[in-house]
Amino acid sequence: MCRVVLRESGYSLGDPYCTASPRALRPGDLVVIASLSGPFHAVYEPDREQAVVVLERMGFRVRRSPLLVGGRHRWWSAARPAEIAEELNALLRDPEVRAIIAHDGGQTALGYLDLIDFVAITADPKPILGFSDISLLHLVLYARTGLVGFHTDLATPGLGGHWQRATAARRAELEELYSTLLTGTKPIGALPATPTWECWRAGRTEGRLIGGVINRIVLNQATSYALPLEWFDGAVLFWEEAGGLAAYVWSYLQVLRHAGILDRISGMVVGIPDGIDGLDSPDASPTLREIVLDVLGDRDIPVLGNVEFGHAGPNLPMPVGIRVALDAQQRTLSLLEPAVRPLTLTGQPGV
Image 1 (cartoon, rainbow, N blue to C red):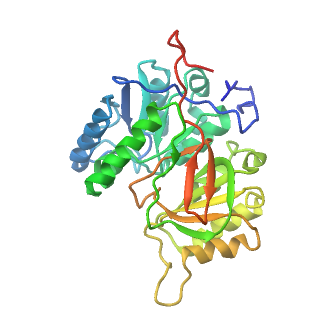
Image 2: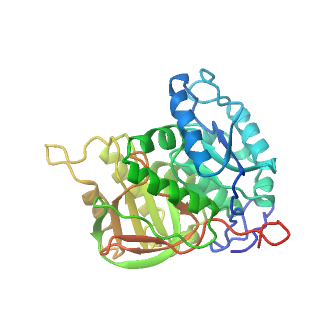
Image 3: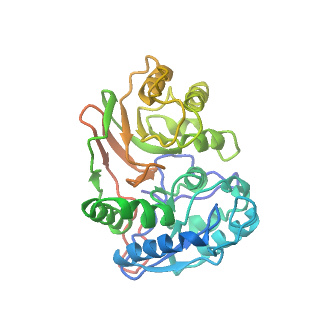
C-alpha cells in the first residue's frame, strides 16, 4: 500500500496499485449510520435498531446521522443532494468518526459527486460501507483518491434485515467476517463459498477487484469520474444487478465490451441476480450465465457466478481495489490483501 496524493485534476497518482487503505478500527471506535442516498422510512426503525446491535456486538460505538430521520425525504432521496454531501463531508472531516455505513441505497449519489471533499478523504481515509447506489461512491472515490471501497451490506436492509433472516451460523460467520475486514491487518484469504457458486468459465487469475451494480459501473464510466481504462488491465470485475430486464443486463455488458473493459479484465465474478425479468422464464429466455458468455464471446477468462453479494443478500464483502485470487473451476475467491492498515506506534496510520 502507498500514500495517495490528490492531483489538481482530481485523479490520484494514476496507479491502480496505489490504494488508500483506512487504518484498522479498534474496539470502541465510532461508526456512523448515514443516509447517503435514499430516505429512511419510520417503519424500518426496528431493522435500523437491529443493525446497531450487530455493530455494537462487533465492539463499535454507533451513532445515527442527522438526516437519518423517519419521514424526512425529498422526492426519492433523504434530502437535497447538497445536504447529503454536506453531511457526508462533515463525517469525512470528523476525526472521531472511524467508519460510515450507508443506511440504504437509492438514486442520489450521482447528484453530489462534484460536492465531495476528496481532500478530506486523502487526509484521513476511512471505510465507507454499502452497495447498490453506494457502489457508485466506491468507484468514484477509488478513481479520485485510491480509497478502498467497502462493498458490503447496507445497515437497515442488510445488517438489520437480510442478516436476521439467515441462519444463526451464517450470521455468526458474517459478523466475524465483517469484524475482521474492519479490524484485521492480515489478508482474509478465501471467502466462505456456498453451493450456489458456479463455474461459468474455468480458469485462474489474480488481479485488483473492481465493480459494483452493473448499471452504476456503466453510468460512472460516462462521467468525468470514470476510472481510467488502463485501471481495468488485469482486474477482476465483479458485478450484480437487481430489477429491470435481462435485456438490460445484456446491453450493459455490451457497453463494457464497446468501452474496451472486457478486453482488459482477467476475470469476472457475478452476483446472484435479484428480480430481473426475463431470466429462466418458460418461454426459453436465457439464463444469466448464457447472457454473460454470449457477450464475452471467445474471451478466455475465468467466470464465477451466483456469488453472494448484491441485492439478493446477505453480502459477502467485496473490497474495491484489493488484490484477489480467483479460481472459477475450484469455486474460490480469496482476498490477498487486508482492506485496512495498522497503526504505527505513535498512533498514526501506517503508510
